[in-house]
Length: 572
Image 1 (cartoon, rainbow, N blue to C red):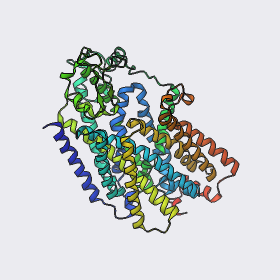
Image 2: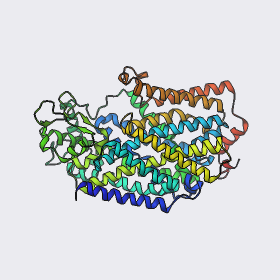
Image 3: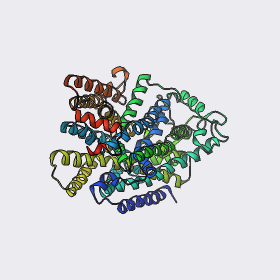
Image 4: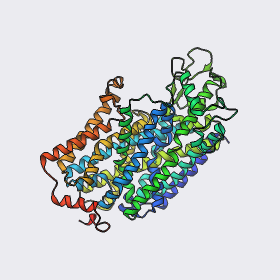
């Protein structure tokens, strides 16, 4: 069977599974819709959290970035993993004990202010939108290749599917669907990695193959894989693979923004309310880290294999170029999507890939590397189809979690808690579904006209979360005297500064987007770190000028931090 037919069968089967689960566990109440009635087992919740967490950016784009940026790409790996640890240890158990399952709810109640709640709702919606745009783009990349349509059509198809099962199942449906998606995603990521590692280095574990010598019969045999990659990179005028070009301060800023941005991400925090007890929240966080590391520890090896294979197949074993007529099938397949383009600059009929003016591969989209990897390495068609199913699972599981944040922010925090407190459960559920529909329409537009590649767009979302939510949540838990005026001022300054900086360099004056023009040499992807520091400083200064939080609030914060029997805080 050809790749297209197999892809239809495998993706079709996984979809049938997801939709069956969504129908089986359909939400009957708002409690089901928002937090799956708090009855999910910690190990299963860990799997669901891992699927929620590993978006299209992790599955499709992260290894692609590392393949192109080498050492510099590792900031995404370190930031996203480190952030998860921070979230699990410093925030999840306290927020769970506070008993509020949305970030705006926590901020509104902790800072005893409707204004604080409304600002938090706006921030949550903004962050989730930027994040979903990246996911929709990821879904589009997958569908465009395997249905052989252009990327816009791919995005539309993905949007319809996401809408269907988010609106039907709510959190309960999403949780069990995400468990299935994690299994598909992890399997799809590991199978080609093991195959390619064995073929290229003779090692079954990709992690050890990454540091091993290349096997006989493969170009460069006997050399260490990374040594070969560095040598090829130097010869072809590409950036060296194992040394970074970014300024150290920028590497630090991006890693830190991704870390603390993680800890302020609304759709991951919600996951800690779907388990029965506070201790289960910690347990499921630990399990999630185990499940996440399965994929994250494999990404650098996939990146190195993919980049080496890409150079070998396009330039040939002697690095002189390969005749376009004799080009492997995957080149022509990806050309149809517009994500790979070849231009015969010297009219010799040969393709050639390099980092200087000799380069004839005028477009090689970073987001295709993981999906094209099995095809480049000539793996069986079913493996290619499996990776497609994994990419779809990764993008869909996160999109669903984010849409839930947008819909709950609007229906629960904005309508029920602020504008129309008298609406019934049924009306609240109706508005949650309407909000999800509008959110999908907008994010589809951004998926078709993205401001960057998938992981870059997602990095902006993390920067915005770092600059707005993280300080408000940390001070809300660990600094009981922080008042509402300080928190509001800090959030506003942080989000406005960070958003302004990103918009200026990405949309207003992209030609100025170089290290020489950046503030302190910090890129738009890393600026959330500066926004976060501004937020802390402004909040502290304003709080000092306007006095402490009321005593009742201080007592409430004490009771979250020093347990007096489970759930004590939520009954005050």
